[in-house]
Length: 124
Image 1 (tube, rainbow, N blue to C red):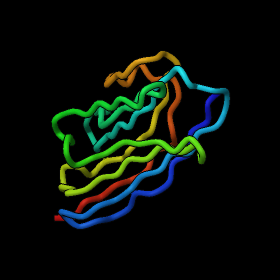
Image 2: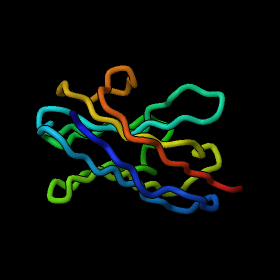
Image 3: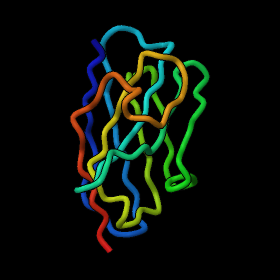
């Protein structure tokens, strides 16, 4: 069982930056991938970023490409999401996720484990 614990988030002004962290533990998931999703009130969960465990390939939707960066630190078993040039529409609860199957995916139902979520609020 993979266990994900998130930290970071908070309130930031438009144009500001934040970094989210997601500590992971459990059986090795070296052949899997991890990602970040977000969900705003009244909206469906939206894909934000993904990273492949094997080759560190990344995948972003156009809405965050060039502003957000996903990375991982194997030594500390931590996944990061660096967010910059934040906009009010980026406000949401952000979730980290992990999947057992190798390969990048932007579909929430293809992830097997989820963090507890952390609030990000961008004020205008």
